[in-house]
Length: 596
Image (cartoon, rainbow, N blue to C red):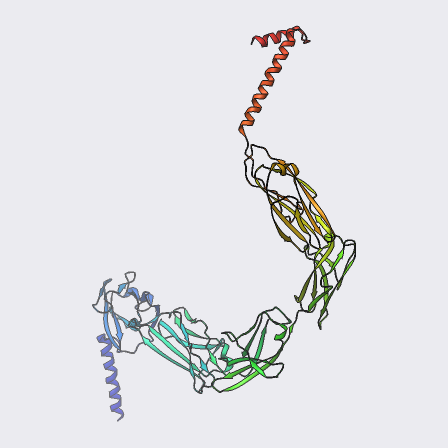
């Protein structure tokens, strides 16, 4: 038995030696192949053994080993290369006229073992393992937009991550809020699949499934692709996504805008809120102060009860009821609303009046549960006259008549105030804006004459000439009378007069008419007699523009020339008579001038 075993071992060794001598590649045991790493699309350099031994190789054969089957792809003879027809026919070339083989445009299909063997002199075969790499594209992520309910008992799809065109197949890692996720039974499930493209590149598709909780409503998910290149390991991250999480409400409450103290006139919005998603169906009710029952109030399309403008009557208890339509359970919340009312302001006396020179007291009153502040202002100027409820006016005159404002405010509620206007009447005979005025008028034209007077009681105005008169009130105590008349010779001579009267006296304004230039254009002239010194005067004198006369200018020039000629004649006459005290030089100068 021992002899037979020894014989078999001897025969096996002899067979191996014969195969090695025959030069059949791949049959003898070889050391680990040399590793060459390149990226897709680049050029791989395949060396036939260590660099110090390549110079002795003049005849080399290169083989491609696929599925353990070597195929001759290139032959080197006396420094000249020959490509063997096949899949590598157009991508192989010699590098630097040596036995190093260059493989261009590397693809994932080129990841295999290449071996070379020298034929002259015969050498041991050398194997090269080619590794090919390609970074995947940026990962894309698609979140579940439908949403996940916390009541689900099985993991639901959260998001899908896709990494395209990578080689070799990248690894995917899922993250939630920056922390890596690992598979957990019945809680977290990661399902990955890959597709091999025709180019040999991989497309990875990974689906994350999980059971989500209420706390995950704001969670951020993203995926990460880990891959390798010749320079080391790398990774690419997707964007972060969130997923709608559905959970029942546990609390309902009322929200009021604006927050803080409310006052009459504000725009107030009352809405319901809840901590559930989706929110329950809401209704808003107000308690009836008489029956104490809750009465539902209409809301807008967004479920908001709008009080605009808010009134004190809107104060009271409001209730929000949220109904979960799935479980048919309801939650509610109540809140009291307080709208601070504007104080009701009154002034005593309601219609104050007094004669000129007298004194008057105005008292402002208001009722409120809050502390109040009072101010008196002059209506036409806005000047603050008094801080307090009482305003005293001494030595009344006509300028003291008019409007006064009592402003009542609540310091605790900014912007809450109320105003009451009262008009003070100062009684006395009528007051005329002007006593007399001179006005140009054109004969046989229509003329508007106006006259303004004031007083308390309000005066009436009459005219001493005939015409069409009309009156317009001016404030609480004034009146404006307009008279349209035809300008006659008698009117030009006598003028016009307006008379203002009331039970306390009378007063007049005289209007003196002066003839206008005959050369002026005829037309309707309007004359206003009124308080022209006032800044708010509404009366004014209106006349048509007077055209300049060129004839007048010509006549003036002619008269001047005639006067100069006459003066020259007189001087010459006196000179001849010898009555001018001129010297000889002067006489000669005059004679010279005369001769000229």
